[in-house]
Image 1 (cartoon, rainbow, N blue to C red):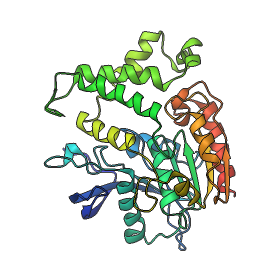
Image 2 (spheres, rainbow, N blue to C red):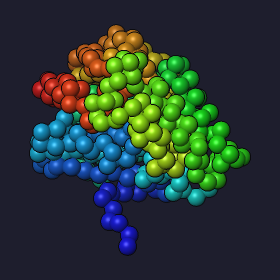
Image 3 (tube, rainbow, N blue to C red):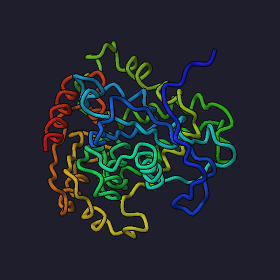
Length: 338
């Protein structure tokens, strides 16, 4: 028996991508929470992160959560390459190069054409979701009232790019990778990728202080096996590569509107901006947000409030971490009050 789908599909039709390639019958999967107000002014957009689908990120939505569906109409658009929206795993033929700009263009069509939304109270995103939130604020400055960039940045830093090269190398070393694509599940590759991620995702202090014990792991190896070895095996390997390419090419200024002028792209942002990196995050370093802060010259307000955590990049996705969750909840409440 086929499981009932818990999300909707926006059929975008044939879409001309930023590269000039036409993507035929492109689909955007999304899920909504709460009720759209008559004025259509209570909307929060919450894009997904790397390899995540909406079900992986909806944990922070709730009356007592970070985002309250009794007050806001929340939309989670699934990023291309995550297996629900158009991805290598559900698309016939070669999968074209897709960018954040392409994703935001289709998300914008969903909001305006399908829902009639012209104002976003907040765009909230963690990691790749944070990069999408930055793109939204720069590309649609008159539409975005607030943006929360949680462990994200306006472009992929060189250090971040190198980390992703390591992830790709671990995954594609599996013999299942042939002629530029995976022809079967890379069992060893998934495990190798998980081990690489485990080293980068968490901080030195997280391992030094054995913080993994707080959530029930009995040893470091137990944490690596149960916490990381199968993390990415739930996703199609070709989908993972497609999303890594989106991540690595991320840059708000790399489009016709800004022509590579990073200062111009950030100066276009008018929203109230909250930059909330993890204090010990090594993917999206605090210093990148510090640099961006000074370039947000047209923002209504812009603050940098790092999450004081030893959880590295995962500080921004504190599913079983009440301390970091409380910090994020308080920051978002303050942002929404502006």
